Length: 60
Image (cartoon, rainbow, N blue to C red; front, side, top):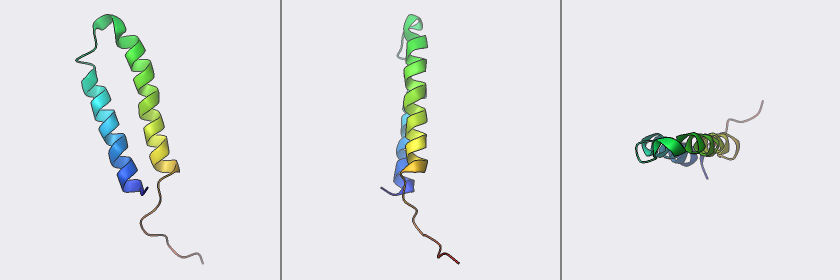
């Protein structure tokens, strides 16, 4: 996948995670924050690590 697509997916996951705090009861927010933080971090790491560049500059 290209980096733009993975970055968009990571952004969407981040936004949905943030909006999900409204739906989670107060007692379960600490678990939701821990699990969601890991998912968001993995999404951003994947976009940087596995994303292919659109234009690769030639080596000199």
